[in-house]
Amino acid sequence: MAEEETKEEESAPKEKKSGNMLLIIIIVVLFLIIIIGGIVAFLLMGSDDEVANQSSNTQQQSAPQKKSMSKQRNVEFDNSRQLSDIGILYPLDTFTVNLKSDAGRRYLKVTLSLELEGEELSLELDAKTAVLRDRIIRILTSKTLEEISSKKGKQKVSQQIMNTLNSMISDGKIKGIYFTEFVIQ
Image (spheres, rainbow, N blue to C red):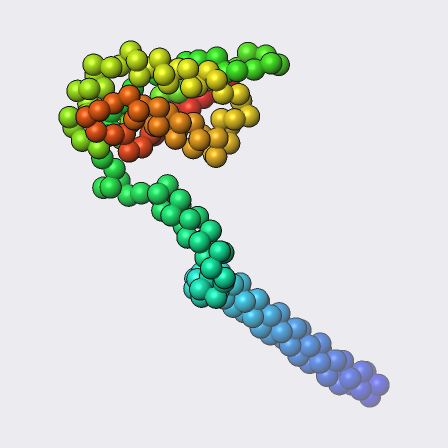
């Protein structure tokens, strides 16, 4: 019987030791989770600091690099104009044209709106609608799929249309072109 009591006394400290060890492991795991969560939060919130660091690094760049960076910023600013800055819009009917292609038939369906400098220009555009549509169709049919499928290609087409139409009008000018539908099939 004395042997049984000794065995019970020895097993009690082992249970205490394993219970303490389990508690220590849980505390360490919770501590690691808190540290990892803090690091993730810091990295996610740190993106604002990176923007500030990038702007200070831009100031330290040489003059040619500054010019190219400012041009990029201006392009981004122009593309993200606020709705209040947009002038009068003159919607045009949908254009469905064949694209220039060697491999097969590709169609482009485009609906666009012209941003006008003044209201008086809309009267001139109404009178010249047939000529405007003809010039836009000629420009669109001269393009290949590769030329218009990228963002840069769409910008070039938009600029070409704007330049062509501005050369035809006299009561003002077109400030921008907005594609409201652009489907390639």
